[in-house]
Length: 223
Image 1 (cartoon, helix red, strand yellow):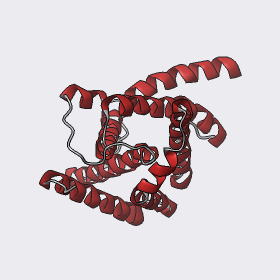
Image 2 (cartoon, helix red, strand yellow):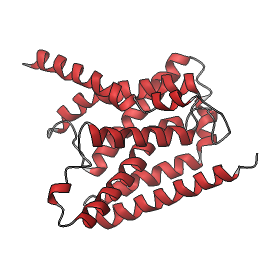
Image 3 (cartoon, helix red, strand yellow):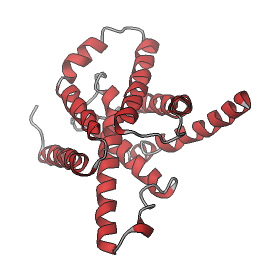
Image 4 (cartoon, helix red, strand yellow):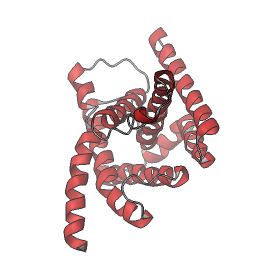
């Protein structure tokens, strides 16, 4: 099937964003090993047809769903490990235990949305990436924390743009990786109501609610 002009433009934009991410990680990241993650993503995306054929051999929907969720969680742990990230706690084991309360519901929510709304690979990539950006701007404020430290507005803007690109691409890759196993649309035209895209921006926020409850439960158990 020939790609439309808009699809070709989207492919080009995505390719440029990934190239920019590789450059930013290579040039500025203190953990060069973080380059491994986008390289693995590119490889798995390229081989997705074979992965989808393998995944289709799993006939039980519950097993297939569990595989999707656990695969997403493993990739999240891998990304944290190679990038030196510890978003929830400075102790690694505690970090991974707490992270269960976010990543498992996060990918479970995405699996529900993919099945219900038939999101394509690109829709998953951009919706999850922009969802993380909105969360880090309006809730966690991670993308705004450097502004008071910036020497001038131009440098602050450049750093902000770089952070937005990294957040969009890396979190988009993280969410899309397990979706490479699914037989879903990949660029075909499929009109959806605008509210479906708004719903697709919510997994970060919904999973954070579950995380808060999970942390409360852990405190009750271990204190």
